[in-house]
Image 1 (tube, one colour):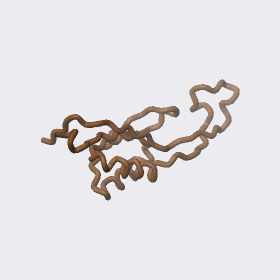
Image 2: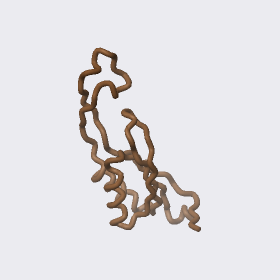
Image 3: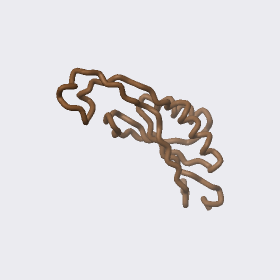
Image 4: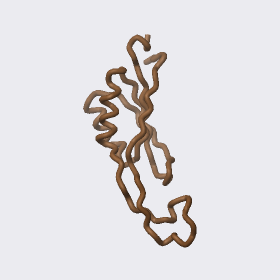
Length: 114
């Protein structure tokens, strides 16, 4: 039964630019993962949702890989890409924080592989 094994489903939401690098690292350490393209967030840029089922004791290892490969950084974007600025600011570049990752850790009640 999954509860006895302490299985967890990790749902990792990362930027497109970081996703392939993270997937390579997960494969290197034999962590199974599935990447699903997604869109969302503040700038509506491409992102990826990576799903991985791991033993409970592997959660910290995977979270550390996300920290290493999906670092937050600063970029300059045209102000018109931002949803809240008014017309007078349209020609300006605005500094925004991008990247990083979000990891949801969910308990697995049952796991079936066919």
